[in-house]
Length: 229
Image 1 (tube, rainbow, N blue to C red):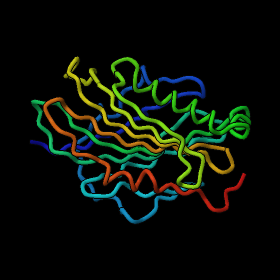
Image 2: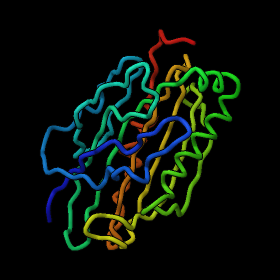
Image 3: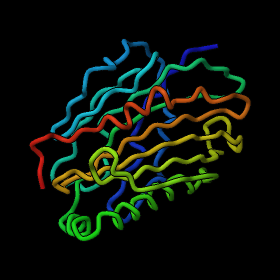
């Protein structure tokens, strides 16, 4: 048995209306062996215009903060990542868990669409998330998506189960991917924050379950109180 932490690459790299998931490496595939202190679970992680809490619980490793996208960069960019140390059985394949924070700045056209009908735009974004988990090596097995204003912002929540048959060294072996996404539009409509957590499980193992650890993270998003449209 080995202790393993998943290092995360940018999983989503798209312009608005396009999606590059099929050609991007899955973040669960990139692994590093490392040990570090847990992130401070109760301390807010502050970005330029919003903040979040780290995943709660034991054995979470906070990765380096990546640069926030410049004003004219309209792709979705990962800016923070967390991985959970999990026991491993090399016979079954890598069992991984991660959480990410990403930002997408909006074009003038997108901002106009949001202000005209935010619900329709979020429905469009849900379709993109669904597509990314049902392409190439990924087969979407189950999904549930809905609009969500419970944080006080215009958001959507998307939960899914996919089958991943492209895990390196375990090709065609059906790993289960339990994924959870939330995207929220900033009050100014200038950008969108995307929070994600997921667990990929070998077929011979059971999920550890991330709900208790990651729902606090998912629902911790706060935009700057001075940020107004």
